[in-house]
Amino acid sequence: MRTVDVHLPTDTWIGMPGEWSEETWPDPRDWAREVAEIVWADAAPTDGLGPDHLALGLAMLAEGPFATDPARRTFLWLPGPTSALLPVHLEACAADGDRDDALRELTRADAAGAVERPIVEPFLSGHLGEGLRVLRYAVDPRDGAVVLTLSYAWRADGLDVLLWLSTFDTSLAFRAMDDVDDLARSVHLVDD
Image 1 (cartoon, helix red, strand yellow):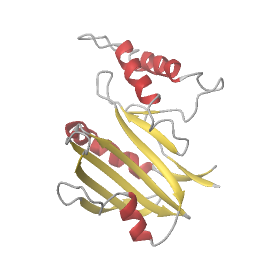
Image 2 (image 1 turned 90 degrees about the vertical axis):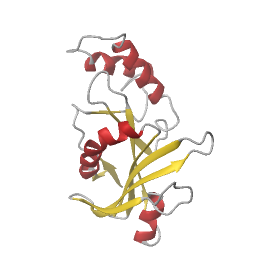
Image 3 (image 1 turned 60 degrees about the vertical axis):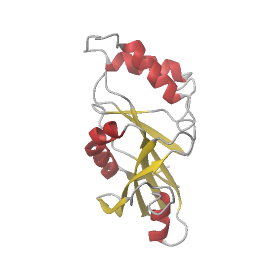
Image 4 (image 1 turned 180 degrees about the horizontal axis):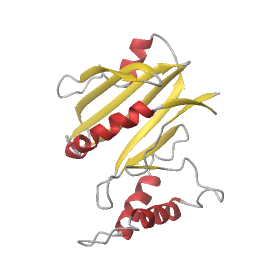
């Protein structure tokens, strides 16, 4: 069976485990504590921020609904110990229907609710070929806040592949965008 993976630069990205077990980490808090200590190993805590603060943020994300879906891999953009964490998710499913329609649906390129026309452009990957990159702003129906979603989708070897992030912090997304583009280019197929 084929699935997807990424080449993950560990100076900028943290890969979240897909499961918690004695072979990996018994629970998300153990993982979060270990990662926070590694990230802060060569840094001095400032302004009340230190390993405990980062460990709390990591644990909250690791215990959240997006990180606990077994069909989804989650990667956290963290260029420095005091940076805000930005989750980016990777999913793959069996390809279905027309390629262009499927990629537009996966990226929500034509979905209702956008505050302006999404920016839809081709996105080339050396591993997966040509796909789509969609930058979209929508209004959160719960509180009216604007949500930025950046999505990439490809069809390769019978799979529809989606890499995406969604955040209220548009500034954070723009600071991470070049690194997210690089991560998207690193997505590749592997045998499971």
